[in-house]
Image 1: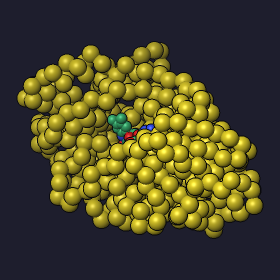
Image 2 (image 1 turned 180 degrees about the vertical axis):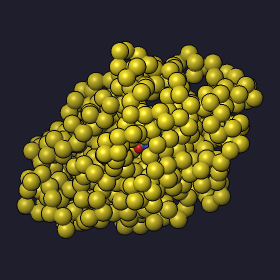
Image 3 (image 1 turned 120 degrees about the vertical axis):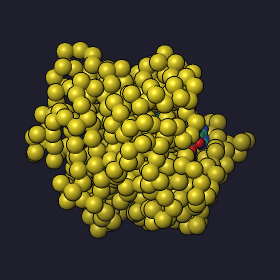
Image 4 (image 1 turned 30 degrees about the horizontal axis):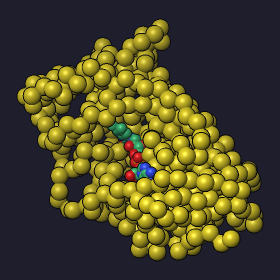
Length: 420
Ligand SMILES: Cc1cc2nc3c(=O)[nH]c(=O)nc-3n(C[C@H](O)[C@H](O)[C@H](O)COP(=O)(O)OP(=O)(O)OC[C@H]3O[C@@H](n4cnc5c(N)ncnc54)[C@H](O)[C@@H]3O)c2cc1C
């Protein structure tokens, strides 16, 4: 039986849409043979409108992947905020003490450390580019999934769509993951991230500021309009109390939580709170089905890695499938999908464990490692090679990277795991 499509991507968020775009741009599938199923498309970006509350810090690897996916130029032309420095410190020390960890793009010979971009903008640019290339975007939520040795089928709104491969990119509460019977292990941090946009009395100096508080973490991410996007991760009870404060009282608490590093802080938006849970799928693949992005793993946001890991999943999966296709193999076969899982699961799990550790030791000061960890920031800052290594990994210019993340077209690199 000929399926309706070769590829069905469930979830047209940033990661799913990027994967579909990479698959088409790298000629893995013809655009007419790809469908993206998305239950809720974002409103189109309107130039000059207020910044959305959900922003992400993109690494160089991610912006390269978005360029290969054909969306970065449109995103950069719309609105992005480059940041040049990052200053991370613990509440036991002053912001300008030698115990702060400071990354500087100039020291790495780079123009910046990455870009702060609204999630909605990334998603809309990718979906627009997919539509322009002839990919079908189907509105609806997946209700059922069946996986057979040669074919997969998804049901949406009473309609059945068949494909040779289904990719679940439907976020942290993935329905595809659940319907495919792929178990997860999760850790509820019992924290919420309070997110808002703010004005600061002092200029942010294109620097990302992060303070470990002993009861959580506070990040100020610089926006191009002079405002900052804040992510304040605190325990559930404190989050409820902070949200209940009136605006002036909240602003006072916030100014104090950053130890006055940017002077007085004023709210420029509403506040929202997002529960923080780390999940990890124990398997990323089954016959005719693969999970990518938050559907496969969610991590604590304190180092801003979630979507960056997801883009690496998308590029690695596309690379492995293209390698299989070039060898005349069936890209939906389980043994091909396992190559992707072998490359990405250990990396993602390592990052998830590291984020959990930073939260326990640095943000909450729990356990015997905590004392060492708070001094560790300053120690790493004084150790040139270690600091350089961490900065290059965080920037996404070192490590086991798929070709698209290195700015190389996969077919030029000739790299997939079967040939390594
Ligand atoms: C406070 C906070 C700050 C963060 N900051 C950063 C950061 O600085 N840098 C970073 O890299 N990451 C960051 N992250 C993580 C990042 O937001 C996520 O990793 C990223 O959004 C995951 O993208 P995704 O496409 O995998 O999933 P999602 O963004 O969740 O997209 C999933 C898509 O699937 C659709 N969908 C869901 N179910 C169905 C269904 N049944 N049928 C059809 N469609 C469906 C949804 O509508 C959605 O469009 C942060 C997260 C939080 C909470």
